[in-house]
Length: 325
Image (cartoon, rainbow, N blue to C red):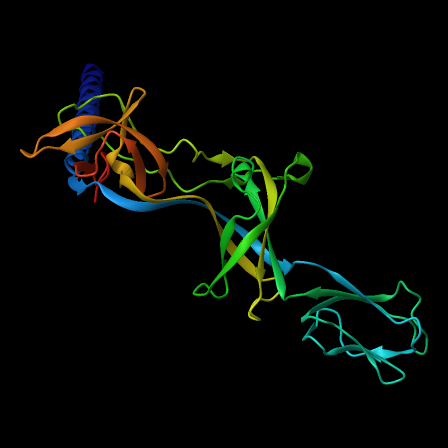
């Protein structure tokens, strides 16, 4: 019995030693990985440039008619029969229905017949019977826009429209309607998330100040919206004949634009406390932290309002800390 107890004690000690060894190996491996990731941070010296910056909003929508028409049957002519059916597409001037005298009910525009309420054959219209017609010469794209972005869209804004079925072709449209009250809001479905373009991130760009309290630059007006309300906006555009009602589309609305402005890559700007700064490269290769005031930005560049003259070179982190190949 004494030998058995001794063996058990030895076994427990051995197990503890093994666990300790495994833990030490894990810790060592993690530290090596961290050092490797730290070593992957690289820098690039980039000249301050003059460029054009655009801020845009992209939203999905569906091709619809800009207006709905009701073509009434004549109250003085006898209805003979229909020439079209519901959901059928007709071109401008084609007959939709025939009268007994040989004349026809015609549409002035091309489009789709969406509903038919005809008189009985051999009867005249009563003033309420007609054909619901969706002209497709003027197209409207109905968009759903997050509540934190709807205020940035105004009537008359231009929009680039791409039909998902033909992504190589681009159309130009204009914002003709923006909802302005909560009555127009569309509540997001449970669990749905609408996220804007990812804010650019950057690592520690000052090699001489490791450990400084710095945050990645991100434009103040590009916050994410989760599970909020969605509002309506409408883009109108002319149809060249290739757009069909019901097609899905993606619209990019131009929110703001500045041309020929001083700019640096987004990753060149960091935050220290309440100040934004860039690392300006001197002639001897060293860097100096320079305070700047920033303006409009996109996913690539940020405007420099003050702090730089335009002939400087700035140091940019081209790979963030903790990122491995």
